Length: 302
Ligand code: PMP
Image (cartoon, rainbow, N blue to C red; front, side, top):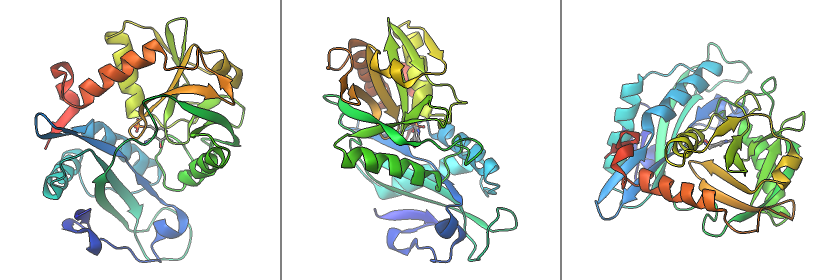
């Protein structure tokens, strides 16, 4: 990491430091985004995926946490492009914008507290093993509910909930956890959305089931409909429906398209990456790496 955007300017990464008294550091009162930049080796070009869409979600997260963003959508995109350019990475990167309660103050609340905005980026490869499919569990931790901390906002504090689930999964030998809502419906992974495939149809939990409204989820819905002509349904999913799915996969900025081959030690389908998941993976990667001109509008070249 060479440069960050901090307090209104691009500075060396080592200078982008906050005080230990920062409100967001003490209370989790910030929101963030995770955006991928894909490096296309043959074109020698960096493509940022769905840049504007990520900032549109951040604007909504800020509304929920009463954080005032000093920048317009266009300015946020421009600052990000400038920072990516300045860092000169020639590999895949992960871009992390953070909008947060920046004041040094003791005391809870959201109003009357100063806000700030920062970005850093780092080289980033695979987050989950997407080549052979992963083994996952359902978590004993419940996903935060909309009346606890709204999950559609990408709030820093929510990631305690996600980390509890992820830690439990890993300590028990699983790659990832599937979280259920307090009512016991399938919500999502600790850091990614989930899709089931049954009889050639895609099914994914609804936005009201405490999910983060994933950008990749939207991409998958679009690709499934337009490229594979498959019907997609957003509806409530029970845990037991996971066990009888033909195919299962996670999707997210980090996870990309990540096939699941086992849930709670039960084999999914034939225990190998399913054919529809495999097709979606291929289409996804060609689009996000800038190899399919049909989807060039998703990409911001740097
Ligand atoms: N759910 C959670 C809890 C996440 O952290 C993420 C990653 N941002 C996702 C879903 C996937 O969202 P996206 O596709 O926008 O990265």
